[in-house]
Length: 291
Image (tube, rainbow, N blue to C red; front, side):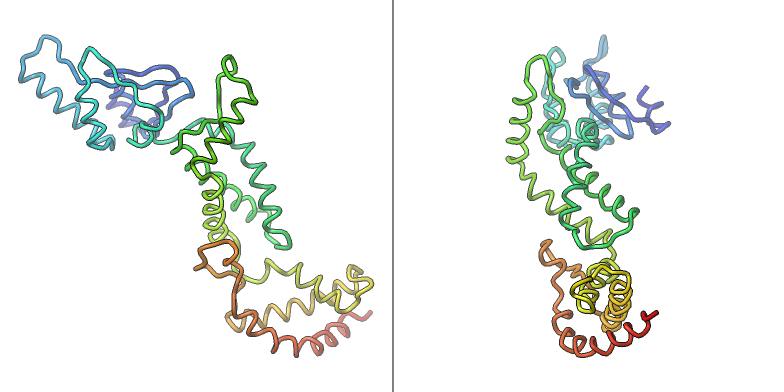
């Protein structure tokens, strides 16, 4: 059975219990997952009616199968130290650490909730930044997916037994667990990495901000009028072009914090020179926008 699963590249999943020889079939899966009530049990192999030599050969073969599945030596040693008439049920955290489980399922069920939370957070963090719908979705998927991958390495849970635990009690336990494993810091780390990967590092992301800024300079009382917006867009385009020509990018991809990501010294250095040009650019754009 293990050979068929491996040859066909199938995934394996345990919802209830998989123990003893069942683990060999489970470990042959390309992706291996465990349901919220699943248990996986291990013990040393026992050869029925075989000689001592056969017993030793079977143990060696089983160890080899476990090694080929990527299980670490200390985990295999603990399996082999468990007598055949006993059973060791590692915790989900131990199973994840030993690569017995390669992916979790609980937090995938929370993906919709997490996506809503991360979308709201991105809306706050990227206020004033223009990004395409496709770019936003790619950034959002990166953050949610990486966060779920990390959550699957912790012992925090999304699902719970409603028969024994209230929703309020579960949420309190979940918050405490997330605080304990450093969820907030991990979110910041993931947000920084995904932002560097998916947010365009050019001034197109600030076109709306620049447009409104220069529109207000043109007409302080009516900055959102069609004429003011046309003039603002015209000035913004030329301003951003000058920044790009000077190889001044809006993001510092070497930054180690979100605050440092948008801190680029070149903007401050170029600003006095560019500001001297703005009045002339503004007059040219005003003339171009005239009916």
